[in-house]
Amino acid sequence: MAHKHAHVIIFIETMSTKYPVTYSVDYPDRSLNRLTTFFRIFIALPILILLGTVTQLAVSQHGAHSSTVLAGSGGLLYLGPLLMILFRQKYPRWWFDWNLELLRFINRVGVYMLLMDDHYPSTDEDQAVHLNMTYPNVKTELNRWLPLIKWFLAIPHYFVLFFLDIAAVIVTIIAWFAIIFTGHYPRSLFDFVINVIRWNLRVVGYAFILITDIYPPFQLED
Image 1 (cartoon, rainbow, N blue to C red):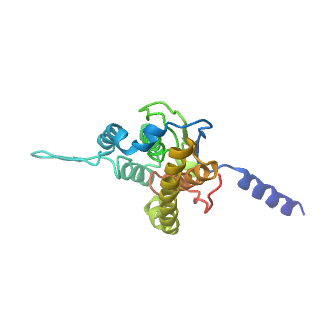
Image 2 (cartoon, rainbow, N blue to C red; image 1 turned 135 degrees about the horizontal axis):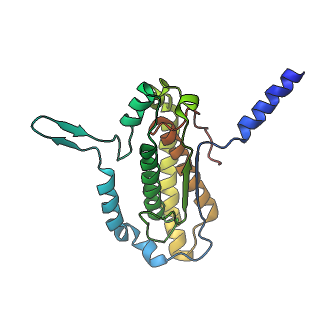
Image 3 (cartoon, one colour; image 1 turned 90 degrees about the vertical axis):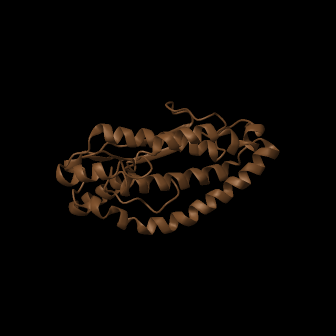
């Protein structure tokens, strides 16, 4: 009987534990700027160009006797952490911080492009976007061999997210019209887009920046 109770307690604790990737966006409970919403894609060009210069870190520099290749995909450090986890069971803190801060910046720009905030994206302030990831204790929390196949294990998520991302784009188009005519982003549509972004980020945290071995849940809710 005590054994059963122990299992129930463990199950409840597991269910109540938050996923190591958390994400939220403050709902703009106010009238949004209709003019900047209408011309958003043009107004955002400078910050998009800046983001492009930051994320283009997969650069090869060929010298007479050497070549340097940095980072992995879109500026996120992937190969370095994978090798460090595999051979040294370490995840350098500055690599973790780089990935987290870059994802925060990307998401501030993304939220602006998705019309969820009309404040111009900051390069360093959180603004309305709140993204946090738990720094892993590699030796106790991460399997050193799992990073080799996480991208493969996440394939079911790719299929689901393909359709969810399309739905999020359609929702954004509907929201564009809603803001132009009413000045407000419908709350239900806003929450749906947040949930889709959160799902994407959990998969990124698991499969590509390798901060957790906990498989991402198939759910839109937080």
